[in-house]
Image 1: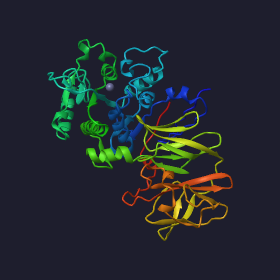
Image 2: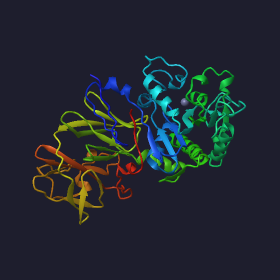
Image 3: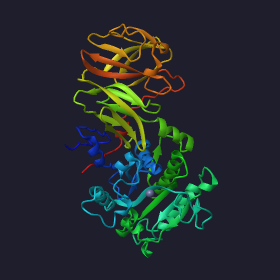
Image 4: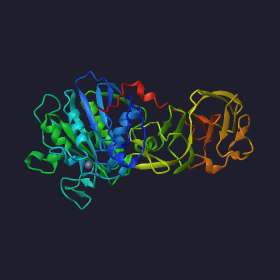
Length: 461
Ligand SMILES: [Zn+2]
């Protein structure tokens, strides 16, 4: 039986895992997320993840989806073109996808994905294409040594030729040079300097002839490769990609707003910590920044189906024999070991006393606690504080609980600040809240559907 991976409305990726998951993660399809004003005939197409071992590129593309607002103009983002290779952390389990654009067999497992991405490149409104890569070393026009060399790709803006004869953005070299200039004004260190790399593909570069950008060029679409260096840590690669993307948006008159400061330190925090996943229509929301490698007794619907909404399109859940793994790009964040329940859908709000103050709390939220909290008794609802020391209580509502009354190893995070409070009605699981005792890091409540306010759509046609 084939696994059904359903991508439903907007940015909600709802995955129904049926059986035999290993066979099916290979079929993980990619997302096309449309941002901004789609009526404009001036769309930038950003492609990330053509090769799964180049995370700087796909991380940058995913952040355009999650942390940028397009205020004017149109941006289409594919953050996870070769999603299976991203999860496998492999350049291409079925061969290099970026060599399949000139010719591909119908029997190639990548066939339908290549056809689909080609169709987007060819859409009339798409006026400029950027394909994001992480390349080895540092490109230099003249070879200095094995790291700084003309045959390296890192830290370069790639063009296939000087120009193409189209109305808009045909001056490839000039645009590329402006991108390099913008990146070079914002270097972390001198040696990261960007250069234009012209592959002169038409002159007989047999390898580059098979690439995505050359396919675009051949169909009258200005296209560029952008390469960060594999010698840099992930957040620095992502930083350089974002600088380049912002310059392309600028070039096209696309106006944007991002909700963080673009500098390497802040970016690292965004990548590592501003990540969440919610389950079963927000009955549970887990902050993933510091999540433990394994979480036990995680409530899963009796039939084994997991419905989830990730905060980032590089996230997916893979079912293993007796657990579920949360993947985020190249990282496996955590394994969830399930405890199966029927689900109760009525409970939306619970009442707490947090540090002496009464609070109404929505199921599936994170509550910041300084000293103690108490869940108020409610008829028919049983409360289970996971790891609470005194387990003689059948129902842990009505008890004032401080951090030292919860056993540290039951936290969901590595620093033992985040704990689960679970709600049940009879034998049914009704929802969870997370209490956060880390006063230095109050977690702002992060509504995963916020990004839907924009015209976001994830297409899978
Ligand atoms: Zn690449």
